[in-house]
Length: 296
Image (cartoon, rainbow, N blue to C red; front, side):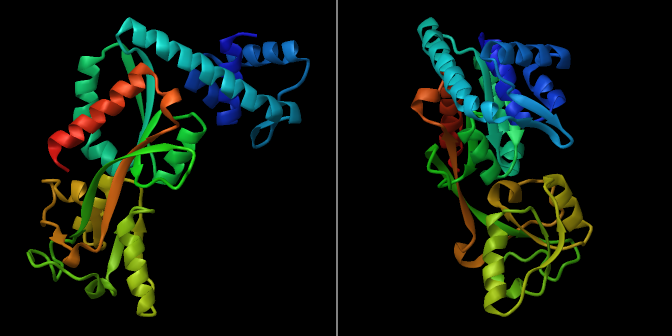
């Protein structure tokens, strides 16, 4: 068996559909099928079966998957060591990031990194902390910028920065134009536009619960631009991290929260030093250097 067969099988196990797995590897679906069939023939066992909901691993497939992943991790580690000897990072790095990080931090980092290391191909995935952490653990991502500390004990983490949350309101809101910090207790009866999992809303839920109420959610969305535009249309208010609050496109300046009671810590996570290729290590160093230069 060869590396391409192992990568085909692990991609299919991860994506659970031939079309998505083939796309992730940059090969055709027939090529992916042939690679998996060749591997099954060498092992003398069926590894996957098609089902209405997608691809399902057989018992043999479940047992072989961890061995295939360890073998590929060992190959990648060897490639990393040879790459370091060559002195020039190369290859592919898969980076995950929270939506606000992807929108407001990564553009200058990625642009500078690409200029410094043109032989490295970067792939950026956007998502929420729990999802990104799980992908790092499974080896689907090399690095991820998530809320710190991570919930998983299977990743290594490096703290990057801490930032407060601010209150964003519509132009005709009673608090529009206020420069005075606002207490969260004053927002109990407001309608909110939220991104699921944001630390600000978790604090708001606690305050509402203490008053025997629940936050009134007007809209949930995963799109940052949608949050801003919905607020400005008058749908509701939102607690946004400082990165987003500094966006010059707000029609009304966001308002500080009294006492700094809402904040988030941000860090970068990976599986461990043994899994860091030269390219991955170079990207992590670039992220850390950028954060220090910006004094987050």
